Length: 563
Ligand SMILES: Cc1cc2nc3c(=O)[nH]c(=O)nc-3n(C[C@H](O)[C@H](O)[C@H](O)COP(=O)(O)OP(=O)(O)OC[C@H]3O[C@@H](n4cnc5c(N)ncnc54)[C@H](O)[C@@H]3O)c2cc1C
Image (cartoon, rainbow, N blue to C red):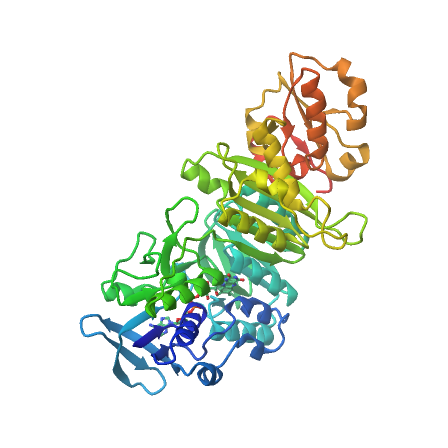
């Protein structure tokens, strides 16, 4: 068996190592176009920001070390230029020597990754406009920051690479503005959850231009002028393009392999392409969405590594399958951790999949133990089965652990009722006796069981000010601190029972508090007294996340403080 692996980083290096572990006899050759195998793509922004100080730490292993352990023939600076499927040969070019030669194969595992999208904006070829994909890109950006000491930068695109770059440029004292075409950053999150990120970014001094794109880059007196489609003009010293990536499919396309509608190489669950001797993995492929079953691309390291292992299994005669992707991801933005798994509401709407959105806010650990941080949790639940379809969390400490529990729950097809039952580790420094995952389960299960009726922030525009009455249950100091909603009655929860006689049964009441818990208690009081009521899910905090949209669309005007 002679296995040729094309691309020697996340998916390719994993596939090669797994193949060797399964077969001591196989001949394994890895072709890597660049200088490094198995480098830490995910660590690159942090080296630019000098959080990772030593460049060598980005090199997870070297070709020599990999070869010593796995006895794999690694050819660096060597690009596979073509695949002759009939003759079962690849043509390769050594970029150092200029030599071109062919190499036979029995099986190929393709893991060429994805390339950054670089639209042909006028002026985009300027040498202070960068993409970030690999170590040479990183060296270029870091050298520019070190030598030119830029005062300001524009990051185009608010996905996770853009956000990480914005953070790390701020660490280097570069005043940074993100320009994002959507009306929110982090497309995997829903609008109101991304709103919590917008607030944090602004707090950290990052400029945000949302719902606007790049028109052109120009030069003026040595500085860069960025013109946006909506007519904004920004002056800066450098720009990072992080608009997204597209599967690197040239080799596969030219070899006549089937390519999907999203541009990724089409693969079966075994990672086999339309040619039984060629497998493909990682950012270059289209896989199945775990929940909805449609084709999708997931340019993330976890799926690439797993698929590499699965492809190697199948190449070496073991049956192993990839059951689909949940797109589980996590990103750190200054002191905030943002994570998601499974479907978001935008996707469920797009595919017309019935769902209930439920919000909860919990402390990362017991409130009496120092340092607890709040996290906002959004669950998307199937109303008919109670199955969890997706989850999003924005907070600080402990967000990563909760999203992983929820990803596991989705992978195991668990319901929101099972989340209520999960027995999770607890001691005050780590969690609460009711973990945030349990709380999210209680809140979601209450909705499905009919113990609570709710209204979400995005249903506010349908409220009728003549009929619907908001009741703010928070204490006066909370209103003063964070703002209020104009027109709401103010009745702190503990005074609600004494004020019921003032309420009118022909109205519908919408009690709300800071995060939804007091709102739920008030709902239970009102409902049991025969009032028509709805709790504002996620309370004022979730409402705040969506404030721009609410202000545009709703008959109720929030009165914001501190702005
Ligand atoms: C800055 C950055 C930060 C990231 N952060 C995260 C993160 O925090 N979490 C996460 O899950 N994911 C992250 N990712 C994404 C993750 O790195 C990728 O999903 C993963 O590396 C994909 O693996 P892959 O094997 O498909 O491609 P890659 O790891 O990109 O490897 C592809 C390799 O193939 C080589 N190649 C391409 N064509 C040829 C050819 N014809 N011949 C020879 N060699 C070829 C390329 O040179 C490249 O080195 C990040 C990516 C970047 C760029």
